[in-house]
Length: 400
Image (cartoon, rainbow, N blue to C red; front, side, top):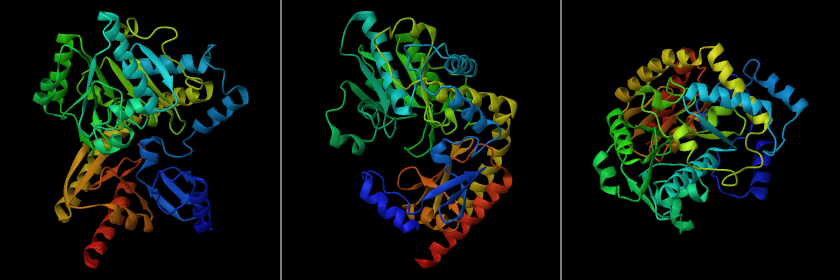
């Protein structure tokens, strides 16, 4: 049954993904089930999307109620779910202006346009530059791809949008070397995701913030994967109190609904995009923003950030045990419930073996096992994940 479904998919879908050979059918809590009924412990959460797992209390019902009212209006009109969601995300982020998108890549596109318009209004030059980071990942659209610091993703689609320079994350001298009188923004992920789960250091962020303030350069922080509670804070930059001028968010923002946003300070919002500069047909629709609003409510009502702060140290402890026990695992890095096991070699075989045993993991680059589970996991789920991962590592070592 599953093989037949996969064969049909390969005939109909454009082959831009090398998918794992299972067809997922439903989810419950932190568990997924394929179409043949096999159960999997999910430590990927749809790539850090399902912050509250599957069918979290009250979440589904609110969306069903909104479907019965209205799903879409377009941005020619106001709608109350978008207004409420905007108020709530402003409150948790400390930012001042919000633009809702349909995805993280669209949020990045909006952030780039905002930065360039802000700079253009100052001097009407069109040669402004953005500094992004090597090994970063910001999305697959042309603008987002242009600031993605992995040449292999970009080379087949050249030319990219112009005037993008790249520096090294956590190397302030490399950033300074790229700054010129044309620099309008510095952009980075507060915790690099696809680049291998690499957090930006506090001293690095603080120095960049200082440079931006000194030169009126905009700091753009990409919180698409590391935001919405994953590090124990609503947004990872809040751990250090180093506020960006523009911020992007998506993934867990809607808890499963496709929705993203870019946010900015009043200083930027009042001197950048104006009527006619940017738009989206679906962005900020009542259904998506109902999901955003309910997610924020549930985070507060059920103390999700506190739960992450309690659970993350245990996950780190158990992962550190694996580092000590297995030569194949070189180190652990990450923040909160966004963790990576850096391995000595490709991790595909480990991920595949774990999946056979009922554990869903994903990679971040060829040699990093990425763990981005739902934020509601408990110690028992961490223990089960470690048990299966240990079995997989031991078996593969014996087979060599």
